[in-house]
Length: 225
Length: 405
Ligand SMILES: Nc1ncnc2c1ncn2[C@@H]1O[C@H](COP(=O)(O)OP(=O)(O)OP(=O)(O)O)[C@@H](O)[C@H]1O
Ligand SMILES: [Mg+2]
Image 1 (tube, each protein chain N blue to C red):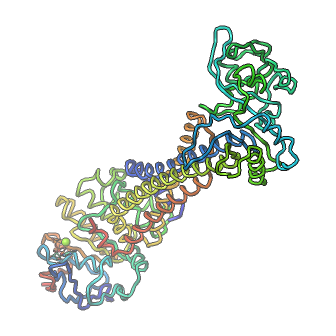
Image 2 (image 1 turned 180 degrees about the vertical axis):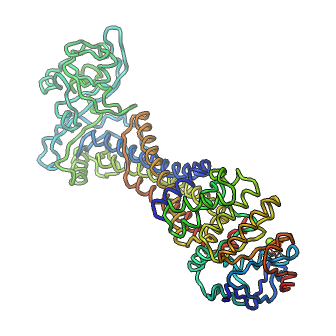
């Protein structure tokens, strides 16, 4: 199988006036197409930092990252936007919905940037909102939704472009365990359909749905046990 | 996304944040509105003063007696140095070629009574030449004729203010008024010329010069001689010609000791223009400051708006928005804001100018250059300060923008 993610010697160092934080320390790994990987590790170990780099919304301090064979470090801003739009579905740890905007509009946004016609956007967004069980909350604005509902909107938003790679930063962190099971069921189905899924989680129960687990500690990887 | 869709989106975003949008628009409205109102006020003042001075008569030269300047202090002009003979000599001399006509005048104030009404007003003794030289127009009846002057007639021509004050607007022709202790028959009414205070050209009674001097005031001198020059280009030459002519008539060799002074309408106009010009400049200065303050207001709101939305820009980029789309979206918002504010500001500015002109009775002047300038300045400010921070935010890494607070 071909690698969708190939990271070599990735480091991320945050510099502030007084101190340096090494969030990722010379990390190398590969994820093959069609894999379902869980990333685990203590708080502050560098999981989100790694995820942001994989999602091409942050750049490593050093190292190279090949996404689907393409060197992400050599791409310009607009090319990166395009890749994020078409290839990656990102679920942020902090959801990051547009404020004062309806769930439906939030879910439609990536399709708008892809130039998909309005009727199709509406249809697809409605379909995915139904999938996450929010068909009766489509016209609620972000601040009128509970944490778990916001998280499900964020998941729906990450799926509408039918991306090859789904990156989810604690997608079940804010939802009840039965709903978490549902989301996992959804991810499993997407995975069976050929999507590659990388997911951060704290809970071993959730991690067990994945086929492989990567452990992170102090910015270093400890491969699957 | 199509431009139409982006436009609709921008509009929706602005509508979501009514207070912020309202404040941004208010800044622009105040900036533009005050510039237009202030500049128009200045120009209206300038123009109405100039009009009024022009209406006193073109190519007009006036000789006043005894008004010598010593330093900048003008001594009271109560001397009796100008005579009817001076005026006659100027009119008939072959040495004087620049003067078309001469109007000897005697003016004073007197109590005027008719029936139960009375007023204290300006009485001017005139000859027929007065009419042309001072651009006075007769509304009804006739003006003082040469035979009235020759025969010391007790006739009077009154200004519209007198008609209003003493006859409460009804036709006064043929009526008798008492000036001092003498009865006069009214033979004419002049057309209103405007003016106010001591310069009110409507609050005047004209009587024959001879009657004013001999019967009313017992004087043998003149209070002024007005002259019309042949053209406005030779005002200075005319001033010199008449000046030297009178000096030699009065046997004065040193021009600085002259017992009269001559000034032209142009002199007054120049002085007034420079005064009102200063006034307009001052108002423009105030307007410029308010435009600047308005501009800073726009700048501030725009910067806050965009900074506050840095996270939003980061998110949009993370979801696939290209720089161009983000720039266009923010540019559209700025344009909608500044344009709406600009249009309201222009309308309010014009309305304010109109109200000022109605209340103060001055002219209603709208300066298109001030509208254009105010509009251009605030639009440019709005666009630059809306566009620049958006551009900056869209250049950040999405994650940096998302973490921004
Ligand atoms: N912008 C930043 N500037 C400085 N240090 C940062 C920044 N972002 C993250 N860090 C530091 O980098 C380290 C890794 O952070 P990261 O968010 O990747 O942790 P995490 O594993 O996702 O933790 P959690 O499980 O709590 O979400 C932490 O020590 C954090 O303090
Ligand atoms: Mg994290």
